[in-house]
Length: 131
Image 1 (cartoon, rainbow, N blue to C red):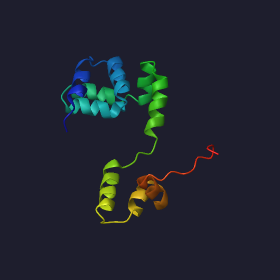
Image 2 (cartoon, one colour):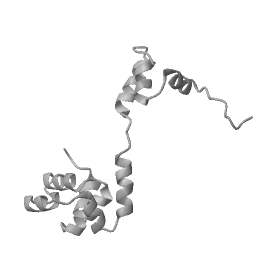
Image 3 (cartoon, rainbow, N blue to C red):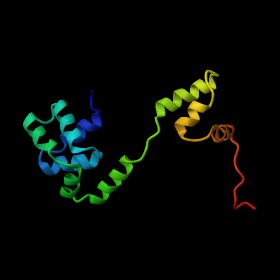
């Protein structure tokens, strides 16, 4: 795995202290455990630093950097279900190519096929406030 140039640049701009590590974890919205191992695997910190940083919890990082509001936002966002975009794309393409029905695509969206078909056809419901 390779880190993006921006991730490497961000990591190099922070000295490997507890404060800067916590700040980087909060900036990137990643868990300190994952960040510690990532930085170690990229050769940006040594094993001793990695072992120390792995013990940091996300909440500890937020408290240390005075970012509890951002922490709660991160928790809320992380807890939201995410659509499987590549699978949706493939399912829709299979429907367009006539290889499958609309049902798999609708199931992935968590909706009825009639609702998905209406959305794809551009059919709109009458607004309850339009009358």
